[in-house]
Amino acid sequence: MILPSSLYGFSRRGFLGSALALGACQPAAQSQTPVAALPPLKSIAPFPVGTAVQAGHLNDPALARLIVAQASQLTPEWEMKMEYIVRDDGTFRFEAPDAIAAFARTHGLGLFGHTLVWYAQTSPAFERLDEGRVSFAQAYRNYIHAVVGRYRGQAVGWDVVNEAVAEDGEGWRDSLWSQRLGAFDHMVLAFQNAREADPNARLFLNDYNLELLPKKRSTFLRLVERLLAAGAPLDGVGTQTHVAADQTPGEMARTVAELAQFGLLVHVSEFDVSISRAQGLIPNRADLERRQAALYGEAAEAFMALPPQQRFAFSFWGLRDSESWLKREDASDTPLPFTASGEPKVAAAAWAKQIGL
Ligand code: XIL
Picture 1 (tube, rainbow, N blue to C red):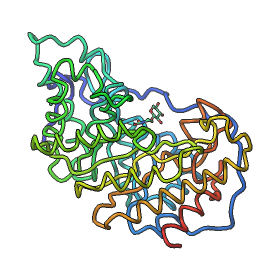
Picture 2: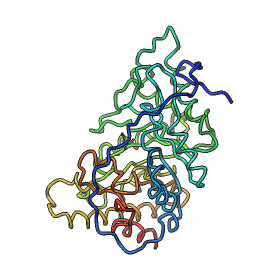
Picture 3: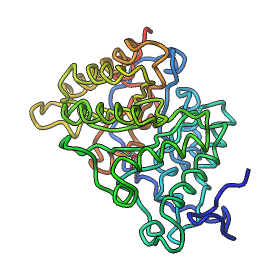
Picture 4: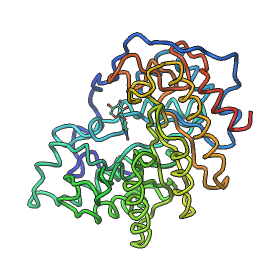
């Protein structure tokens, strides 16, 4: 199968190009008390356990070993996003996502694609498209076909539309995509294009703060309903679940349960529990870490309460604290299940306990 190599269809540059070094900076990690040995998370979970990765992580032998031991599925943290794939001239590059896909194949891990359409990411190549040269809808289709088609047969699923709902729950976000293709239609089109490009990949609508903002959650649920009513090939819903340690207990569990109401697959897609984002009401770090562990337990319990056939995967947004994206916001944050040296934390043990260890 020949896939488009640029927004405009085909170009001589093909897939060549060099990777940008845009990985997360890695300040010195603050470590938390590890627990005594824990069996690998994937060995105790009756569903896929995912983690976000960057291609560069795979060159760190200790981290690569931890990933292979603990996780059964990989989500590229940013290198399958438009910011990486589409060059300013409209051609595509795939070095980093190809490296992640190759690692997944070598180690028998699943690959989850993230993300095709995101209000936060556009490209100058899309922005300057005029209808005279190639229709916007054609370029949109070329992009989705090139990316999804490249990993056809390997990717188990895709976040097709990411973060579509406005933060205040008043409708959907405005974006280049909504402006050029329609607020609702661009989403339906994206799902249709993705389905055409890989009929076997499971297709997701993914969003965040659903546990924090009930109005946003309800708008998200209405959007799912509307997409299904319009015949969009939507197979699952993703709740990122980037929460803070002061998250009100119970809301995460309620969210996961409500998302299951359509009978679709449910993906806890980007789980982490920030210590630093907790508002100053709980000033003691030890208390925050206890709350963090309780939230890890709550998330695992909520996921286990789903009918088994709806448990798509539970994905952490990284394994070791040292790689967390939240380090860029506050270098002292420790939101992930493993310490910087790869030891399981109390939070990991709380998660494992609810899975049935
Ligand atoms: C973040 C990554 O962790 C960063 O490395 C990247 O630079 C920006 O995006 N919601 C999402 C993810 O859907 O794609 C975001 O990932 C985190 C929030």
